[in-house]
Image (cartoon, rainbow, N blue to C red):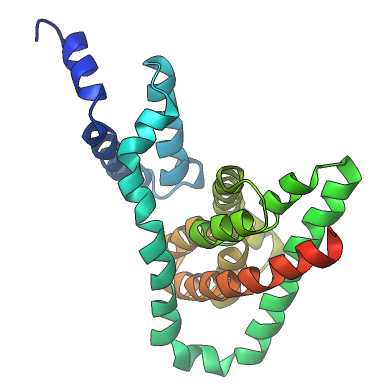
Length: 239
């Protein structure tokens, strides 16, 4: 290799470089978040997405080439989705104590998330396929993409919407809850886990262990609720 540019050209053709870059970027973004005292504006997911997008744009790397390496991370979405049942099982004794309010919050939150998409989508005239991609946006990515694809939506668009939902939720949850005067960390965590899935849950764990626990429970329960309610909503509300 006669120059760093030639070395980069050589490495960029290997899928391994993108897997390595993705993992290293995440580690660096997490460290940055810790050093800045978990400021919501430096959320590791948001930082990683921005950095990798800039790298791909500057070097003209097509997404297909990037995904050829990053698909190994994508593959782990399946096992990770199944694993969200673990905290629910381990903390079942905690859940039983508040089963009724959890059930009410889960039902109301899931239904409002779905109905609001249909109402706003109809108001602005979104095509049916786009609204289907929007419907499962509050569920974790693995479930949301599978539900969207099964109903004829675009799973790639759903993935983008899921990530945006999670990032926005992680950014606004703490200041919004403080402004509303909600001090119960169980309630705070459950709300963010229900609406902002894994990204919101990670943020909840940064704030308080109890908030993180209930966020994980909400994320698991909402994954189940979404897989049941979204197909019903698509059939009844979208025809």
